[in-house]
Length: 380
Image (cartoon, rainbow, N blue to C red):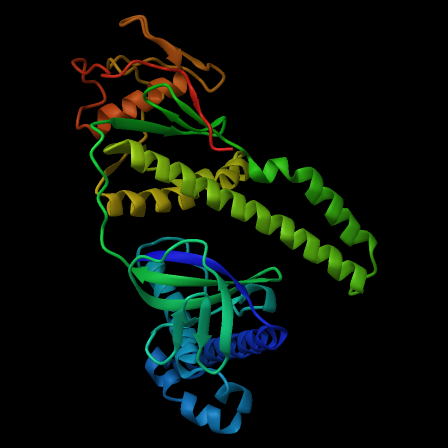
């Protein structure tokens, strides 16, 4: 599955309809969650999707606003809750930290989905026709390749977007004959085994001044006043811009790697554990998890091989196999055995590639095939 996201230009009437549907779907989600909680608490009965979906026809008879929403959208809202519970129980079963499903406030429920195209939505040119809503203009900035399966309308601050989930065939790229290891970091987003670096733009950190100004403005203004609401909207727009910058950057870097290399090796990082340390804010800012998801599906679609390796020991071992102990303050890797003298992250990237190719950490017969170029790949 591949996602295509386009901006919508709804009329005032349709935008009001979107907002009403969001309210109905959020109320349905919260009510269904309450029913599940009460059924288990009072009678130890486990309520599932099917029993809740069976109640929808009766609800429509007494609630005109619910009857005005597409049946597909209502059902997908209940499936959304069901999936949340499935994810919760799976994490509990696997012994991972799990948070019980929560009720959704207005700011945390911003989309509704048509799970099937037939009879629910239709895209003709720049016009999207939605069941029970009508025709909406779409800014199609690129061609959709594949069969559209689902359609999601999403609100981001005050803008509206449509996201199509598309079933597409794999499109293998021509072979390049190149392989690369990548070391993730804070100083640089990625350091590659050929010596190239991809800068970390630190989108959140670079917006701190703007955020502080707006947050102070919110605190100074009268609570619940129009001026405070406008300031809150301004704050949300800044956060949305940061999110969009990270997303765009992740797409561009992952596409570049997949386009230029047949064989890509990265670290299998314990991101949950890393976000508990003193570098948590910086790690959230680089958004590695989102980047790795993009890289994974792009590599699979392009017929590239992506290998994830255990990062243990990659920063304390020379690519020649010799152990070279150094703390974080030491940025230059110096090996007395092979004479290697490179930035520590370049050496780590070379070790990562070495492990990805099936060699052991201490293998002394492996030698990097490419020379170190020490250049920065620009994505600004």
